[in-house]
Amino acid sequence: MARENKRRNKRKSVEKAKEIRQALPEPSKPPLKWRGYTVWAMGVVIIAVVGISGWALYRNLSHAPTRSSGISESGMDPGNSGGSTTGGPQITFPESEFNFGTIAQGAKVSHTFVVKNTGDAPLKLIKAAGS
Image (cartoon, rainbow, N blue to C red; front, side):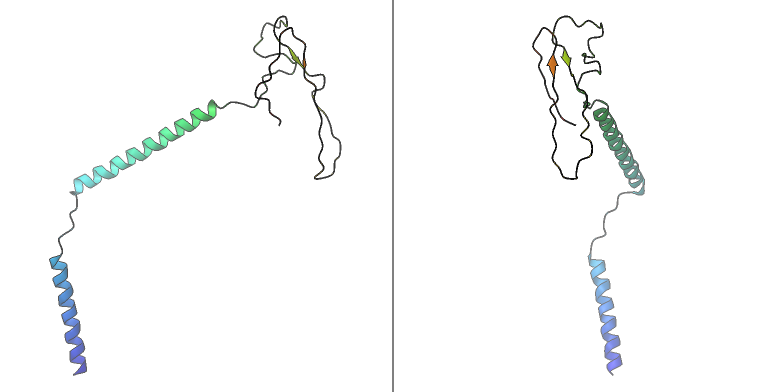
């Protein structure tokens, strides 16, 4: 008798689940044709976003400012292509490098580089940065 009760209860629960499924509305699906267009459109959008992002990144990197000081090794402004040093400021460095030799790890060292204006106009140092 216990087996019959279990079987009857199982049948009732299965029938109840069927009734519940039938009472729920069918989920609406777009026609198969539109699903294909949706996937295609999403692919186009993804490719466009990646392309635009790559282009923007390339553009930012190719136009990024460099860390050059704007001074050539001869001490002349590279924009002055005529080689003439008359008129205007002229920057020179009596000492272009300094060797500290062997120093202990963690030791604090410093050196002052002299910058001279050998031109006939005031020299303005803008955006100077150490390396």
